[in-house]
Image 1 (cartoon, rainbow, N blue to C red):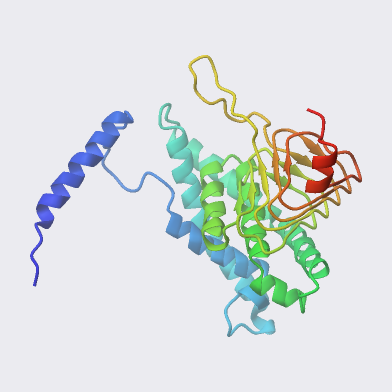
Image 2 (cartoon, helix red, strand yellow; image 1 turned 90 degrees about the horizontal axis):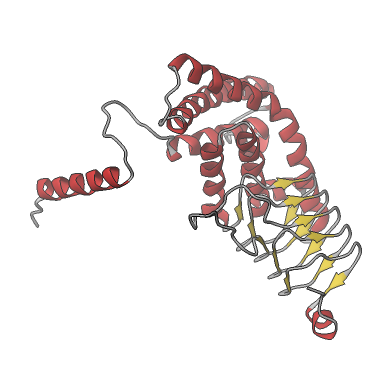
Length: 302
């Protein structure tokens, strides 16, 4: 059997970690975990999905007569777990100007309480997304099939949960939850993006929606669509300026076909249809139809 100098490798890894911490100006403080756990959040989200859709995403042995008990149990476990992760994020966020533990705990409890109160509204939004997928895809046999099988719906379950946490001041938890769905579906939805009811992503792989995108109601997009930024402004020191509006505004009832790329803070007017594989960096009027042929015949003004 091969022999490995595990102790030597461990010492070398220790040195690399110390180099990283020194470069990042972080101390090596004793104690437990400093950051939220991706694995813990994955378990929390699975419980929340079961609580939101118990008879479809809950355990296979669940019976209708036990549904309410199951939902209450899953919520209690998930929310207590989320509270612990929220404390970790807030401790990390205030590491340069530490707050009293009691204040951190109070802020975490307020955020998780507000998150819990939002869950019925989240379920209603997700119902509208499921119906949009069912009515928007002739291949969908039932709403149950859509909920169980469609990657666009899975990504929206994560996004609706993550967007709420993002708005409650827990952006790291939100980003981890979003990236769990990204890893499973290939759909990259930043939790900061504001997405209205009845949103349908068909097929989904390769879709990218940026942090400051705003999407209206009853919007449908297809695979490989990008709602991205055209440029990245920098400050006087050459560092990226964060949080500025830099992604598209998509109004109600827009359809965006596969491979379309829309960049910058442009507005896609209500009812517009964006054809496949087009590149757009200018506003599109309400009700307009934009295709490769129309762009070649009459390019949009810059």
